[in-house]
Structures are given as C-alpha cells and as structure tokens.
Image (cartoon, rainbow, N blue to C red; front, side, top):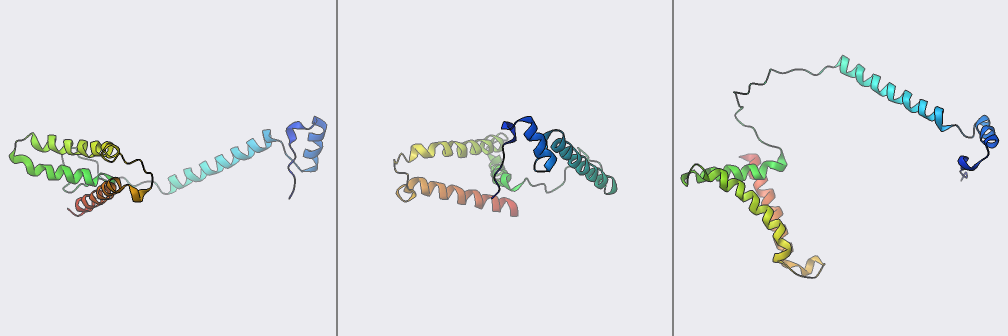
Length: 153
C-alpha cells in the first residue's frame, strides 16, 4: 500500500517538487476549480432538463370546491380514522366530535408517557417485561389496524 505523505509538514521546495512530478497537486486553486466546474455542469444539466421538460400545470385550485375523497398520508390515517369515529358521537352535542376526537389523541400520547410508570420493572430483557411488551405490541397492532381501516374506509 502506498504511504500517504503529509504535504503540510514539508518544506516549500519539497512541495513544489512533488507537484512538478505529478505526485501531488495543490488544493487551491486546482481542487476548488475542479469542484466549481462540476457544480456548474450539474446546474446546466438541471437547467436543460427543466427547460426541455417543464412541469405541466393543472387547473387552478378552487378554494370553494373540496374534492370528495381526500385522505391524508399513511402516518396520519389512524388519527384521521379516530376523528371520523368521533363524528358518530354527534348525538351528545355538536361539540362532542371535536372535543372527544382531539382528546383521544391526547390520551394516546399520555399512555405512551405512562407506560414506564405502569410497568416499573427494573429488568432490561424483553422476556422479563411482560406488561410493557404487551402494551407495546397492542399499541402497534392497534395503530396498524386503525391505519388499515382508515385506508379502506
């Protein structure tokens, strides 16, 4: 394996000799100019692609017309489904779906914070932490189930 020579500790005459022999090159301006050229070429390629293939524009958005079925991304499907379930509680009052739907989200976060206090087991092995493991598996399965339900509803 070729041994690297630390150029910063060499005398100036030795540095010039190694550069003249082609064994080394100067960082500035050689490497800097090389990187600038690469950046300019990549930028020109991007400009060319954007010019030749411009993005198509669809119809303008209408703030007064909401499409029928708008669904959030997958990671928001579970809270979205819980809010849709809370709409069934309209018989309690007009305030109930909003308050209960948002409160359910707070209860879920509160349970996540409460798990260490519900299972104060000092062991670090998963096999010895039955309560925390059960709560974690049930929470993940519940999240997956509600997310799938929200996807297909």
